Image 1 (tube, rainbow, N blue to C red):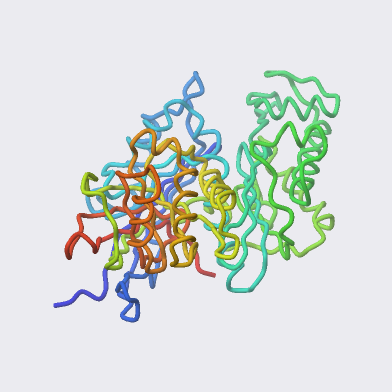
Image 2 (image 1 turned 45 degrees about the horizontal axis):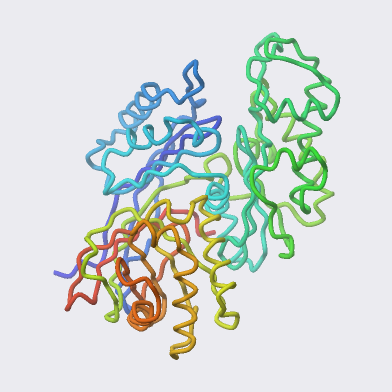
Length: 476
């Protein structure tokens, strides 16, 4: 009997700069009979268990405490009454300052019991901005309400900014502003002190060190300056010396007009009215940011998810089948697993070498990846007309954009929404130096931030089963 519905048990695990937590969800996937690929779409997502939120445990050398983390998540499985063997899909995301720890990848592997099911990733600042925009509901809201939204996820060590329009993230950025950059004990002595906090204090003429007792009015001055810098980079490029020092990435693309602002992350819980703890900057930072709302010049709306924005649920299996015009080099070894999907926004009317190379570079940057670092799938919607001169130009542009991947002999995976994969593959092989390691697929509908598994081909090595593993974010 034909399967039309699939139920999956999903887990999302987030290890962040300040906090760590997990969410269990039940996903209902329904086959889309109108889709040419009979893709399974997520029709329902039911949260089964939202776990305790703990401070991310660190060892004395400031690395992540693997034993404490794995022990915590093991207990969370027990509290939820869920056997790890029953988890069918999910994601482990290491974010913020935690992603910079030298044992972050070890943590990701330890928490991802089956790499074929759980996607494990350390999220750099741009990719974390992408995840937070989607997880907070900002990206979905931009499509549903027809608004361009600038979202700001304020965590323990950084604030991740993104501009979403029509259901897509167009620009991302990050600044070192967060609620745990400075933390105090019960006697208001400084027991946590990050470098960005030192830069802020120097900017306003303060001189405190670890273990010093800090005056309450000076805590207020630090939080006020931090809020001012954050609003500065939300309204326009970083211009002040302090803002430029604190920027972790480049500025947002401020050629995109913003209709609404939205905050998420732990500090946002307090911005929108909840009470917070008072042993760090979070509570007072939230109040200072609220006081500066008028400077933004557009409405501030409340998100669907705040502290759980970065990974609200994780991963679904969504089986798709590529079109019948695929192109594959016989020397490639399949299946390929856990390949990140990078959306490349090439515009048909602007086809040219510089344009294509720039858009490929932007796609890598948005995911905090270096070209040639690992296998990726470049996803194009409608990049080129099917005539030989344009196909040749597109082929040469792809070759120019991927010098390190080609030099290392990495598989080059190109995916198209339109039925052009075979034409592109043949022209690349004929007109460029990329003669091997090429896989070109079409008629697939993917999203930025998906991961895919590509299985061995069917029907004369032209039709490829593709499993899409998407982070599951709210639709409204």
